[in-house]
Image 1 (spheres, rainbow over the protein chains, first blue to last red):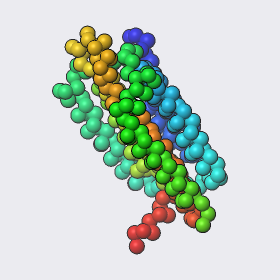
Image 2 (image 1 turned 45 degrees about the vertical axis):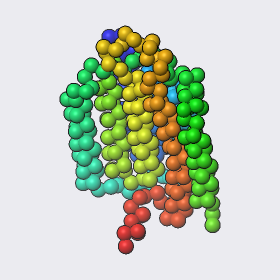
Image 3 (image 1 turned 90 degrees about the vertical axis):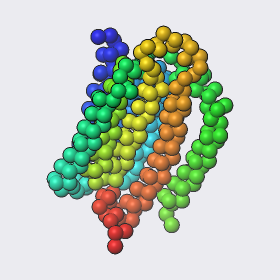
Image 4 (image 1 turned 30 degrees about the vertical axis):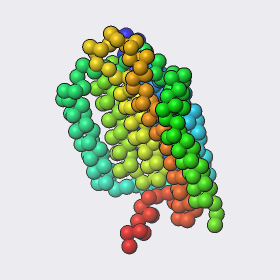
Length: 167
Length: 114
């Protein structure tokens, strides 16, 4: 078992455990912290796949900006631990069962698919994830979507201010 | 690493997010579970961008020169952009909802039903 496989399994277990902890922690602040741990593990996966630009952007945008926004909103609302009323046990059970059934269907499809056999994800090789190649493609082939996304950001900013402002 | 492992990991993350959306009532936690689902899709796209058949592993240099699979990573970048915009608007909506109802329980939002 090479060091890459050990890292893959370690990061996978870390991702899944912290994702489950997001669900089962009662305090929303703890959920945010576990979600940050999940994002760090996913960034580790990106580094394993040699997508270094996406790893850094994931850390900066998700773990840095978005999660700080979540923490800020939670602390602004002064949410207490006991404020969340329990969903009925029956509803929880139904949610877990339906999610588990979806997972079973997806996993069985993946396991039996003929198209996916003998395909591998190349770890530690390739340079398509480096900033140079990604930037070149982004600013030549995908220049129009890039500009459209700037308009999206502008409208999102205006929308957030308009919605959040006291009337 | 076989691509099935990455697909299984992403599907599991996605289903954890779905279970969270279905079982929690706190609007912020539901929002975080949506972020989890977006990240599962991102991870899957990155894994697919590095996917290639075992038989073709010898001409890796030719594939890299042609930037095969770079579209997947560009898509991940755009998903992150859209997620950031979505979070800003969604958190503004949650703040407004908290200001009106003094709670972030989504069950208070069923008044559209009548």
